[in-house]
Image (cartoon, rainbow, N blue to C red; front, top):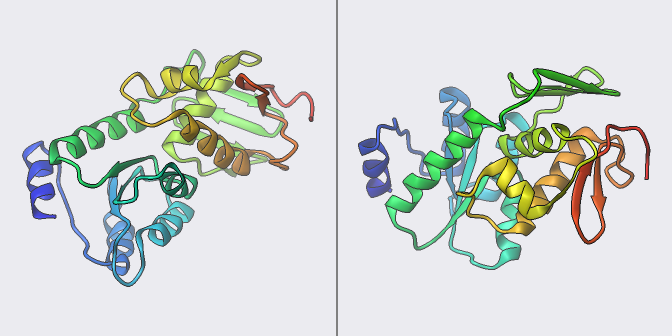
Amino acid sequence: MELIRLYLENNGYRVIAAYSGDDALELARSERPDLIVLDLMLPEINGLEVCRILRSESDVPIIMLTAKTTERDKLIGLDLGADDYVTKPFSPKELVARVRAVLRRAQEGPRPTQRQATFGELHIDFLRHEVSVAGKNANLTPAEFRLLAALAGEPGMVFTRAQLIDTAFGYQFDGFERTIDVHIANLRKKIESDPKRTRYVKSIYGVGYKFAEGEDVS
């Protein structure tokens, strides 16, 4: 932990550390950090539960640290709303690079060609990174917003998963294509009245996804 803190501070980041799940939640609520690096192996409340609670309260970017290497274990964290993951063992330099990349993606977002757009009950403010459904804030994570902005920026265009990675996250994205499916599923839960019969984000069998402007239900 101290080595990670040192590397981050040497790269210009202010670091506050918590050594239990309870402390992590308390500090996240009081300090409101720009990004959270979250170890799954925390005492009192484990990292997955901390992530679930944080995501219900905030859209702060979260990088999970995990010793589990299977795709399924990584997807569990992403399904709870984590933006990225780093598998142990890792070098502090790798973590610093991930922190830099996730913060950049959260701050920049896809470059919008328009300021705002409304599709039925769905309203997107591309510059403010705000999304509402029927007037209620959808509370999207940075990753979910980037995917929605990419899709809604080109209504009707079919994106493969690889194209969505390039458009929404850039070539430096270090996840795998299955990650896109998890983020899309979480996005649908927040913007669709029935995630199983979608109006906005459509699955194109064998290809990927498109934004359908909410004009039909299938």
